[in-house]
Image: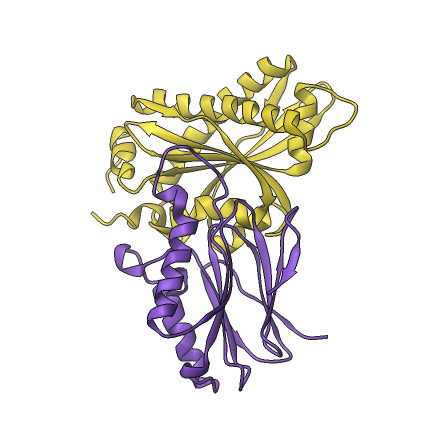
Length: 207
Length: 161
């Protein structure tokens, strides 16, 4: 089996499966977010895109735009990583939804709130994946980076880069219904090279 | 105004004055600038991984340190550079996220930097500036007219090396 075939063929069955995982995962993430902020949260149907490396930073306002990435390792039956990325404006909006404050700045409070939000969102994402695949999958403690989009995205890009010249992105938009604030975030789910077989095998997909 | 030539991720470009070579938002990737001080022929490669030999899907040669440096030097020679005169400046190779455990993939920035240094050393190309490591992104601009490299960051200053 040729590993590099996976992402190249993601326009067919695999992308539909990942879309469905994205949908269920994001639904759970929205519920978790609603519980956390004690407000109604809706979401749009996630968009799953397979893009060239060069196109990815453009989704987040260009390679030099400041973004926030919350990164987790995935451990268990499959290994890999998951990262939740959002624009700095959206990150601050999300924190103020959780904990309204007078001055909304990038301080330690904001960082730990973002780590916790990322933890809950990515955790519900991964537990959906775990439920769907019947695999035992856990996430590590979070690590956060606030920096240029290109630099933050280089991490999943390099991991995908071992397999492919493309990168898979799941885009979610969460809408807080009372004030109609919306926050757009992106998930990058990257299985390690050896974990693709386990992941797709558990879903009954042969490539 | 000098023309700025953008180099994307897994990409390389060769240019000369008054052009400027730039790559935006380097994280764990490395920006490799090579320069012939006499003819001013210059190249910039934005590599993602250390070695094409360990990866099966290796058709994109600009993605890897070894093949990118080879191809870039080849193109520079056809544009008038002399390999024996080449000097290098490198930047990037950050570790954007930190974890206590020693996972190989997490240290890819340092592995990329080591690979680039050893390849250039083997080729006898001296490294005049090495701004690698840390946990922050870098945007770089290389000026073939005088060989200077401008490095910009968010919150970690701007410098010329």
